[in-house]
Length: 342
Image (tube, rainbow, N blue to C red; front, side, top):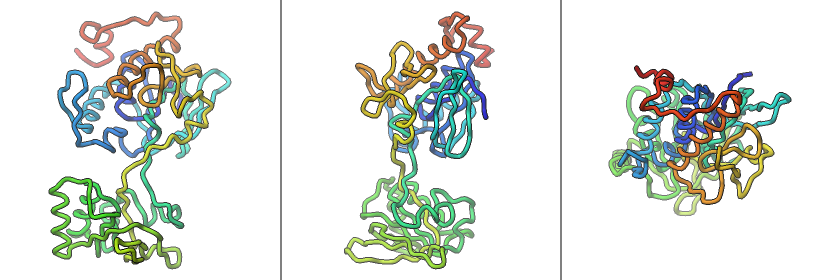
């Protein structure tokens, strides 16, 4: 059981800034996210796309914004628990919150900040019989080791830069797969033009193969994956040799267990008091796209504002005998000490 003053659910831009604002209140925190890296939809959906409305930053990409936020929060050393989905949140007898993840990590938190956007982003899988049993055995979201697919008949599913980069990586070199086949439902890709051209040239050189089609079945023998059945673009069933699948299908938001936590909800969002962005449950705050209130705008910069007031609200709740002062990072020696600034 990890005891903490604050637990943040969600490591997107608002969750990261929440950790920073809590740090300015001298509140240390743990952060849980369902994805294997920080960044939320900023990284998953528009890592290389431009953002123009962050105050003081005329232009940055989603990944650059996350990199800057990670650098900013570094003095407060939040502890991250990634690739873990919070599946249980319940009140304790002493007025705190018991939180547990699907990996068995358990927290006892005095305050909880839900910064889960539109829900937990989870990797897209395949709704096919046998998928769950083969996941992390012969079906993967990422290669477990640098030699995982050496000599294998590898099928990569997806149309993104990540999918095309995986094909490029595994079709050549000393750890190359025996064969590499890219599968996507149509001959169009959400990737950089140079990556698409590289893939097409590799297909022309017979270094790999592209097949347009939709997966319809996992072919197995003695419990082992031997092929992927697809319905190809001609409407015919085809079986591709495969003893390893690499899924680059992106992510999908799922409200998931949040709806089972007993919190008041309106249209899959958490109503909050805009003075502190507290929910109806004492000690639980909601910031970013997961919350709702009159005039709510789903913008990153609005989430930053919400995180700031939520941190002040948490400070007043955690330390009721102390006056919560408004201090400025430009002049406060106390904040300079917390930030490690001389």
